[in-house]
Length: 90
Image (cartoon, rainbow, N blue to C red):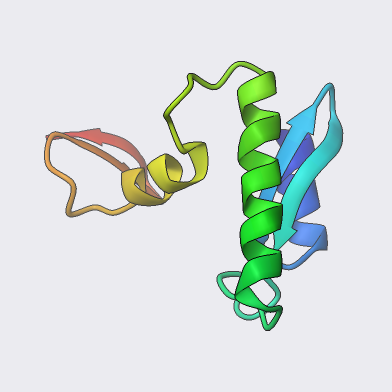
């Protein structure tokens, strides 16, 4: 987790996949840490590569780990919420 966080900080936002402390895939999102000015096709290719690498590392087939984490951080999700204050069970 520390290696992933360090990588995200260094690239000013985005998505990263880390294996053994080493980044192995990712998407740089340089605009506010959420968007990129690269063409959609290129961002999609990088995102699909990152999802494939995550699957190789054990993420269950059919699960998009990046979308899952994005939605878990929304405090409007019922029952389980991941916020800046930590995990909140409602």
